[in-house]
Image 1 (tube, rainbow, N blue to C red):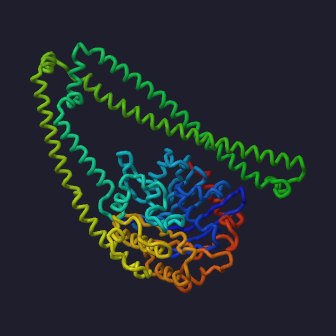
Image 2: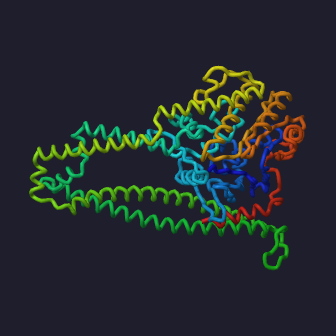
Image 3: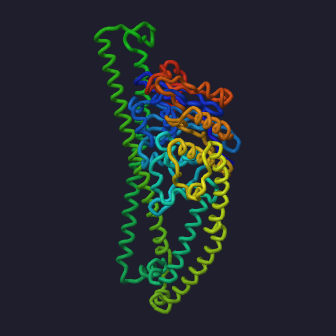
Length: 577
């Protein structure tokens, strides 16, 4: 069953500027409009940023430096059940509330390699039942949050020129294109692929061990116990036990430190809540405009009162920043301790398993003599070879449960043909001549197209719509709003604009929202309403950025206009654990 996400509303507000942006989203097509550089791309990047994606932070720098807080309200449908999803991002902290559950907080997520960012990635992946694994440094790892959104987002900067480049850095994964397409086209789940590769690796190891009896002897627990039972190696046994005790003491110390740090973090979080409430109360008690919270009389205005007010306000803000910094530092230390404690526990568990065999295994004189005999040793090794051969046979049987490389290749051909048919149909609708070469029509071979300008723009559009259409039939693939930033190139004439809008109206996803942006020049009146009437039967939701005239006006409304939702957002953050 596919997981569906629907955007309900987006809020972005800055207490520093006393400005905000708020919009609802429609269930179908949403047209974001405004003049060039007004902030249309900012809306798309804000949606992604709220989910923990840092790829567009440089483009959001102007509003991020104003300490802007973002809130996204959504509906998440899983197993035909709708749940309310609220995501709030305040700088390097994300708050997530699913349904009636408790709010989850993740602090320190500005770095993609941070432990807290990994936790966010895991949480969001589980929300969407997303389990794509990508290969990096010879091991498979959970894919980034960006890959959850990649099929559903075409960026203004490079998305209309290069395929799979709306987010940066993904090309550094080994075989990214193939693994990405296999996953979304439903050829083989990441779990199945990794399991198959693990079995193949195990089989290779077993076969290698069979041909390397010397290495087998050094790895076998029975041989190791023989070594410990010999008087010549009694010192080795003593050293082993001493190391075990030393490692256990180190683990105990770190566990104690972990408890202390958790208590310290809890204290600082409570301290942060108090400071935030103090800060909010101070804003309501500003001299001249503020009132006494007890008698409701206006506060006196004078130099000393004003000086005292601003001094206290600055002290509160400074203390708040200090507390935030301490929270980040302690959270980082807690994460480091968690990793270190896990490593030590695993090592001790492994060491104890071997030690336990030594302590509880009765070693007789007869067995000691047998272990000394070369013939007995060779017999043991022969038995091991037989055991390994049996294991190898079992692995080969297990591998038969998974698709072979040949079967996967056959399925790829079938899915490629489905995509090519839809892709060519869409090219025709957009007035682009039929592409002939396989490297331009077969999805696993496509990297670039033999065109430029308006023709390239429409070809890339046909590709993305065709891919969205194909993956809509893939079982268990999440479905997100289709976001198209800047569907018109600046040199696009009105005839081509109509062709593109008719194409979008006809082929938009039926099961998700579509969010697209268009721009008008300085002296051009917005045609958004006309486009809505002529191409979408007035069913599209129009979202204007700013006043339609100004530049860089994403945060355009007064925060007082949305006091209720802003106050609710603040309360949600204060109530987090």
